[in-house]
Length: 253
Image (cartoon, rainbow, N blue to C red; front, side, top):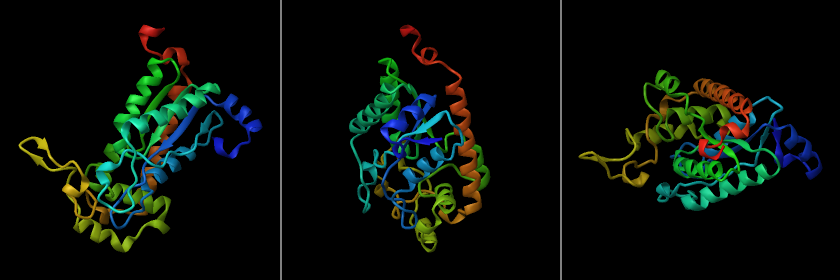
């Protein structure tokens, strides 16, 4: 694993020549209730991306601000417009493609980025620039999360709190987990006759959390982290084994 930002322009040439796949960590700087740090999403994404122990990967600098306007009522939240985010991610991946690495995984830590990342990936593929797979660290862990916490993924919940207890415990206010849970909602949004009318987190969660963060543990976080790294490693294997031409749309081959 090579961190592009740690190279000089001279040594970067060798790192890029050896890389089959680029990893771009993306996340957000947004509220995660009173217990978790604002950087939870990009810390998790970067940690998973940099954990791969392989020479055919280059890790790009992390994009730390994402599509988070729905958390705007909570102090410290930063956000960008979805189109701005889409274009920025597209430009970063176009840059590394210009240096010869045309296959990428966007290692994402924030669900609010999903639609913009899918659009960026489609545009890059349709334009013949690069193939980028948007990938959330929790994407393949549904069963493990259910097994560990008897719930689906929420926000600043047991799963995210566990990850941060494993990755950055010094930045977790464990004494505030109970307050986060006391003001949390059970699910994302407010559904009225089939319509979700909870557009902002503040519409349905007093603390900003969704779920039961008091069920978190560093041990569970380690299990989630290791499973996510294994999933990413397997996805990189899949990408590395395919030529860029085989990943292009059929109509363009």
